[in-house]
Amino acid sequence: MDLRQVFIHNLRSLRQKADLSQIELSLNCNMGLNYIGEIENGRKFPSVQLIQKIADVLQVPPHLLFWDEQNKHNKTRLRPRSIAPDTLKKNMAEQLTAAIHKVIKEY
Image 1: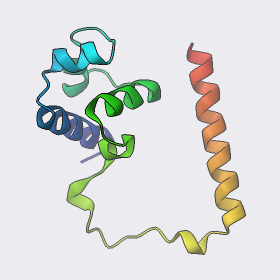
Image 2 (image 1 turned 180 degrees about the horizontal axis):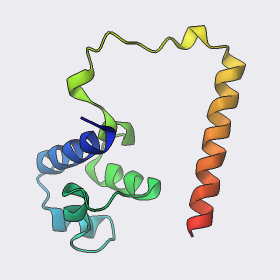
Image 3 (image 1 turned 90 degrees about the vertical axis):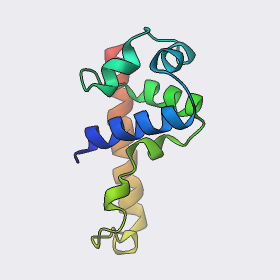
Image 4 (image 1 turned 45 degrees about the vertical axis):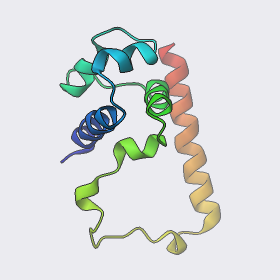
């Protein structure tokens, strides 16, 4: 599964576990009534802000929406110790700054 499919699968699963309909989740996130349905059908993909709102309503950390349960036992592991901490911080700061600039330009 690609990341988008993982997100859709997890969104649907977590929404159902929370016993919420697509419309109820949409209303709780202050969005159009059919928006969650469009996301779950792969026609739309939410912004970072909306992912945070969805996670808040579902009462889960946002990263859980992207967790690929099927690949949790994948033998390929990240080795953060092999990356210098300063390099890691710099890369994360650059990515976060780029994401923030992108969001600001959209709005």
